Amino acid sequence: MSDSHLYTYGVVEDDDPLDLSVDGVEGADRVYTVSHGPLAAVVTDIGTMDPERTDENARAHDDVLQAVLETGRTIVPMRFGMTFKNGRALKSVLRGGRRAFTKSLREIDGAVEMGVKLVADEGASLDREAVVADVADRLRAVSDEESENDLFSDRLVFNRSYLVDRADREAFDDAVSAIDDDYGEDLTVQYTGPWAPYNFVDIEIGAKR
Image 1 (tube, rainbow, N blue to C red):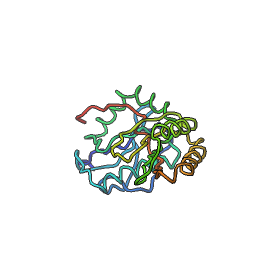
Image 2: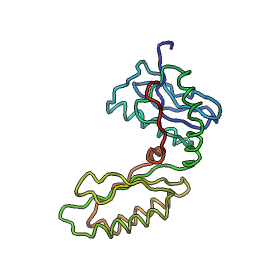
Image 3: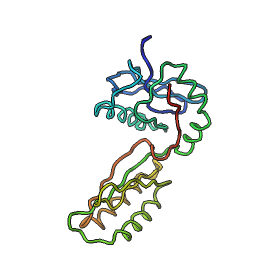
Image 4: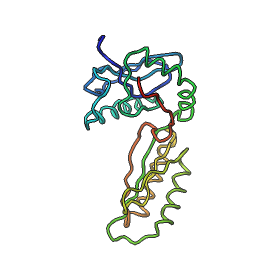
């Protein structure tokens, strides 16, 4: 479509073409890749440069990233809303960011992001510092990297993201289960993922695309 722009979900190595059964942002029904050199951007067509961040669109953005992860591919995720006027503009970004994208793909290769929160139950009495130290030690032992997130509630004791190799997922799951067993009387464990590794990628894309 000549009036279409390219909504971009992330960057992968330019290996096999993607064939994903998932709807994209604004109801797009074709997820494909735009290649440049060794890299490829995962995209869908879109009729606007400024998609609205509705719950449906945000969910669709995540669904496409999840579908890529389920193929076993590693993806450097883009934030919601990254839209390019045409293939030339997108390829320019792939060309200019080639070194950074390649470095990030290497650093997160074969890994996914997992999230762990510990929420204190109402009236619970516990040594927060000791809990945090113990839980952090256990999860570091079965992950590659960690990222601390905001404690946005008084009851939130622990909120971190972890970069976990796919081969270590079972060990990480077991560690979280053991934490739940040990602290479940005083804390609620919220365990999420796998996600595309947003917290372990640091690439800035130029604003007008």
